[in-house]
Length: 300
Length: 130
Image (cartoon, rainbow over all chains, first blue to last red; front, side):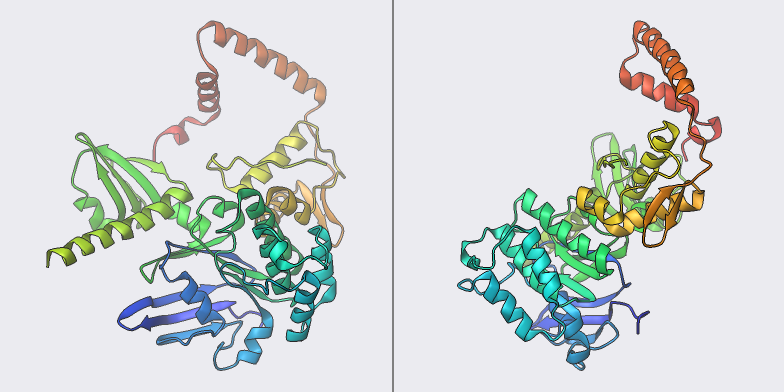
């Protein structure tokens, strides 16, 4: 089972009432990779992670984690998966020592050496109570609990959203060291796009419950171009390439396109685009589409 | 031992930045055959980057024959890498300095000079826009 995708979704969907939190999602995450799940709040990131650990059941399609279904074979999945939920909840009145003891009792694969080394490296004492720790320290303790079960797959839901830049950097260093040490697969959701390029090798952009793009960062960078030229209609370009964002001034048109093969057109000057701009264009596209929908709704 | 740095806004992929820094350090004689590169874990800790990126950079350098990985020990600059003799570097640098002085007198700023240098370096067929 070593060659199985760490996480594989096929036509995966989750509906709450009439609202699809996740719709028709297909993706495959190779073992050993670090993948970012990017999208605005409400895009479906948490839903996907909760489906991966079997906290909720899919409405459509299937999800397989380390080769097994998280709902049908939880014992083949859960001991091998570390999950840090949003806001890294911990028992606030417990000391760090008590929290680690809880982790040891609840996890058969618990490794004291991993937990002890991390707590020492963080300069924390086992007698400190969780509620006296800073947000960054609490996040690090939550990560310690997840890593001490020696997972093959680590799922992190918005792990750094509430942390200051230094704490964010230290937390991510801890995650990446675990990747270097144990070759684990990491999937982390984030609405912060800065720094993704240095941390991740793959990206999934989610918006409105749908995957907008899935791929390695290199593929994504190579597949997008910014075109500038004299003011014109985007129609001709849109017939060949997918126009993600267009803007016009009186004399100039600027298009961000997902190129379908090579862009050869003397009318356009072609530029490379950085990852942050690509991500924002996708998120902007969907928020613009949502605004149009909202206006149409209001007019009815 | 060298310490890597990253330019996040350069547009150059991270692994390639690491590759270029090693090549540069060998060329300038900062790294010699037998010198060890930082371990993957050290680079991860220092730069907060994906270990797969470091591995990829080291693999690339290995394929080029510039470094050799010794299993369980680390990655080392391969023997038989003739670095530019430091004397040559010195002479070249001082003649480049004279060129820079002339260019500055002619009214070129740093950016103009860099553009001119890169453009001259590049074979003419590639400089044309794709």
